[in-house]
Length: 339
Image 1 (spheres, helix red, strand yellow):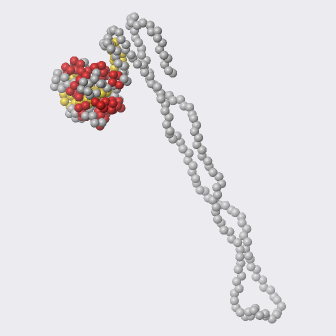
Image 2 (cartoon, rainbow, N blue to C red):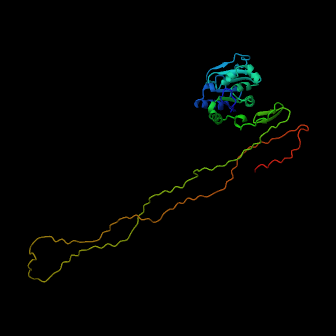
Image 3 (cartoon, one colour):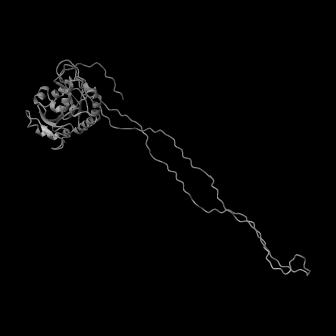
């Protein structure tokens, strides 16, 4: 992020390894209501993610200035052209053919401007980027990376967040994260490589800091289902025999001879009729009762296991190659690296 824009518009610049990331960032910027005249991009012809002719959408034009014929091939890299209007194929001295669009297309439109500023430095400075940061972005650009700029004004933080979300990196002067700034008064002879970029200083007093970095493992825990216990109930039938004693009445009919005698009143001589004698007894009546005879109890308990989580981490080692008697003995002791 750059704050020295003479027009008062803060310019945010992001560098992308992959041109598809830059395209996604530009699309996101437009969805966030950044206008076409606020966004710019530049990419080297033949850089990462360059496609064949016709891959880009939208109009593509060529520069009519010096060297425009040699830059015509750069239109094959116009992957972003349709997003922010016409893309321009330019020829930048010291770099070669590039594709630029939006505010960077006009800023880099003159070959003389590129030559005077050194690469794309001059064009970036005209959009409000400090010269120190512009030289950093130029060195990244010359390695084949894509540069996206946004004149964001009061929305600089939002623009930076969008570029960062899509993989954009920034100069240390803008965010304090991507590279170490050079000490004042340094340029030209000694180069320290850092992530594909280079920091250079001339002979003379000064300090250059090369960071040593390493990755640390962060292990987090989350809840997940590792299995289950299913409890199924089924109904089975079987025959059960229960002994029971039943009582009943039985009728015995017996005919007897008696001595003759006169009939008694009420004996109904010579009357027909039927005499019913009821016979009683017990019968079995079956009913069923549901009773609980047992239960199955399922308990869950938490146990703790110790596991060893292994993964690969990286660490940079800075090696110093000395030629001649160039350094004095370092008497300071470097703190031990945490284990």
